[in-house]
Length: 335
Image: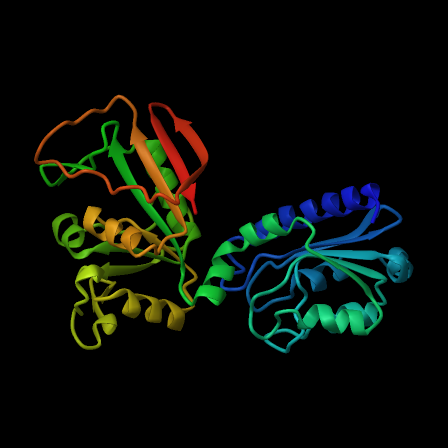
């Protein structure tokens, strides 16, 4: 493939990714997917997966094609950020639709890890004589749906550890909470909660602070709330059936196994951990994390023997983004 074609494929795949992000909140637990149909270098149709249970990105892209442009479909290229589905779910297979429309070429960002797809959609297209290119901007497409991929490949939710600390690395004063976040960064915390499926704190934090763990300063749905009642590292359980015990709208779990089972049953693909040091460190020690977000109050020093130090960043944590908001800095890490 020549460089010009590669550049064109990447250009239109970036548009697919841009479109896919429009379905951020409503498409869950389905993945975010964007689709673009191109003929003679011109986009004649585009769409994204708007809402779970409704038309997929490919369906919406074909629906947007004007009547006068339908004659161009047999010479068109369809770009899609995730492999077209090949199974009957809440909607018919998109691979069947693409074949019926007579598309000449399909460019796929990445393969779908969902067991009922996983390469079958691509195989069906190729068996129908369609030229299929796979892996254009693959890393970007996988990152877009990292929650969906982690859930289906690792059998657990995508885990985001989050804490706020002073400039010298403390998260509380004498065991009491500190107002480290600013009004703006607190709003960002609520934005994060609206974007993720579940949130967890430890028993001590829940009993001491009674956090609401909901969305109040942003619009969106509040996450499902969990309390880890025993440290995972001790290997103890809260009680038999502990994952079914709810208090004040919070589900109490005793082990990571119980937590992940509950997430699987409820289709919760992402989890924020906002607990105290012991809870956060237990996830780090078990290497059960995907992202870490640390808010540091620059200039706020609190050197005190009785204050709680922040968790230790794992050695495999790589800084990939840093944002400043006034005197506070949010650092983002991934593996």
